[in-house]
Image 1 (cartoon, rainbow, N blue to C red):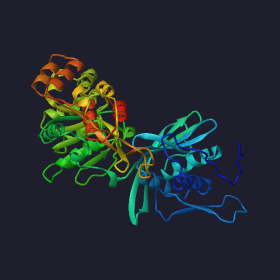
Image 2: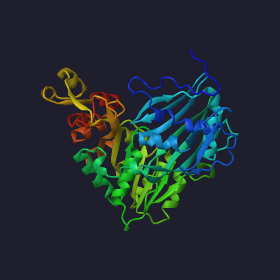
Image 3: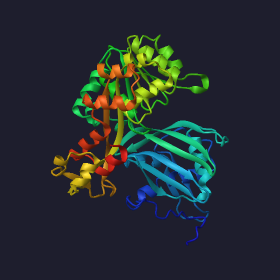
Amino acid sequence: MRKRTRNSFSYGSMWMSEAPRLSASISSTLESLMTGAASEDFASAPRSISSSSVLTVSTSPSSSASESMSTSESPTDAIKRGASDIHIEPYEKDLRVRYRIDGILYEMMHPPLRLREAITSRCKIMARLDIAEKRMPQNDRIKIKTRISGKVKDLDYRVSVLPTIFGEKIVMRLLDKANLMLDLTRLGFEAESLRKFEQAILKPYGMVLVTGPTGSGKTNTLYSALQRINTPEVNIITAEDPVEFNLAGINQVQMKEQIGLNFAASLRSFLRQDPNIILVGEIRDFETAEVAIKAAMTGHLVMSTLHTNDAPSTISRLMNMGVEPFLVATSVHLVVAQRLVRRICSYCKEPIEQPPAGLVEIGFKESEARHIRLFRGRGCERCSNTGYKGRVGLYEVMEINDDIRELILSGASAVELRNKAIENGMITLRGSGLQKIRDGATSIEEVVRETVK
């Protein structure tokens, strides 16, 4: 094993098996933070850093050439590669850096362990966090101005610091407004599901709920819905934690739990602001659910999110919070459950053969399984040899019609609600995934990974 010297950085082989060889640009991604951390002058580090701000550090007194890295190189490189998050993770004998690209984490590099504290301090100061506090989690944002393809862009990313047993783990969520897709027709809705969704958000009152796990694209769907109905004739107010993107013409409020500004308190204030449309970032408790439902029943359109596995389970979740069934039945107009799957790279897409029995097992009809065309990504430079580039949504849209409303009032289970919704034409998450396979948008592996039959 080669011994690491004071003046050298050794990263080794970092990619997971499906990822390509680590390129020179990626290897320098976090080196900018490390060289910045090696400097002792942290006090002057600004929160908003121009791309012209360069930190020059000599790796040894006798070094003939210094290492110059832009402080903004890490987030801009990640955005160019489509990464949504940067993970900096300390372990007992290792320091690991990973990118989340199209929902999958890839190992990028293993910086020297001796720079662990310096990197953490550097990131915390850039985000104006307390570097002396190492026992409690901390969160804030960093804004960076940088030049990409000859254009100056304002990039924003959230910084979350979590104390672990071997040090503080840092996750930076990259937010690039240029990549924010606010067109409902391009998110992945099937035609009938999109019709139902648009019909619900165009109503003057009622509640529309979007459900799914963290990172499933709920915020993007809600922002797209707001953009669809954002006109000068309506007053839109949102309560978010955090506010991810600034939307023109919409009044967005950042939650601050430390001073008592939570979702429930904000909702009560919103009702005195003459709103037409209210967006609540998440319904987490009975108090928030109660105020939101009352707002939906008094002439306001309310949109929010919940964490449930599918659309029918959302109804049961609200009732488990303590909301009366008659309130749920009369206020909720539509529930959308969603997932994100990776899209097959269009540059290296090729047809493949699959035994019909395997297709029948995942949900295709036997007659269809014999004739369906399947595709995969061979892997190329544009998709970093993964075979996937970008993501597309799977949507399960449950409309609360009279049949579903009667079942809710009678205390029906989520299974009964699901069966009735399917009988009424609801496309399930698996069904939406099968349609994406038919369209050649994604692979069987992606649909099976994100949905159940």
